[in-house]
Image 1: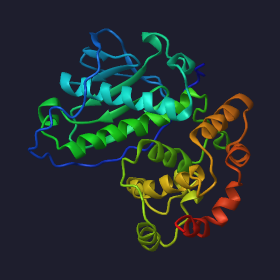
Image 2: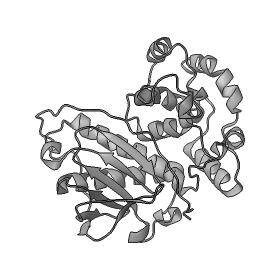
Image 3: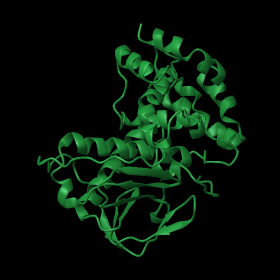
Length: 301
């Protein structure tokens, strides 16, 4: 069941300009079925702010895709990416039916807004997200790798939305929502990484050296970052590795189903993140922070 009372949520807006390459990839993805609907408002839930759109909305099984003026191709492709992402995430988290997430009719479908901006940025909120993409004329010429990256980014944002659907909403009491490193690390892990994941000990060592051995799991709030929020994306690969350790047999051996149980526990019992983390992940946040680099060294064998 969805819990109301929406406040600011999701990953910070990240600016990134991509060069368009003349590379045809018209058959990258199978387009989902859907229909064009109109006269539905797009509202950013956490501030109850309505955003204007072109009133040509693509409705798929579980999403409504809005835009300011992006073409039909982008809307249909993004709906396809979102539907596949949701299906994969439901399987990974052990969710049998969309109805179990409260998605039962048009009014409860997740919302996605894309526009014609040339810089990529995003923001998730209950129960949808905004993704600045590219207009359809250029999108058709994007190389497959970049279109795949959009797919992963949509899956990243959908992971955030799943957390909200589990009932863990942003709260003025920071204890009742996950640490920022966990939020973003989970989304990176579950999506396969919008940012390039750290997959080797050598890559981890380079990151550690370049960042003065900052402990990623010490980033509880964005104010803990030793850099400006504009550079936060540089930390996402390490956040993803921190979550990977928890969910790997070589680490703590937990699973995404354990993460779901932790979120439900937090939502249903108002259990602080630190307590829920220790109960469901098998170690305390303080221990993880104090032993992080030792654990990472041993993780690679």
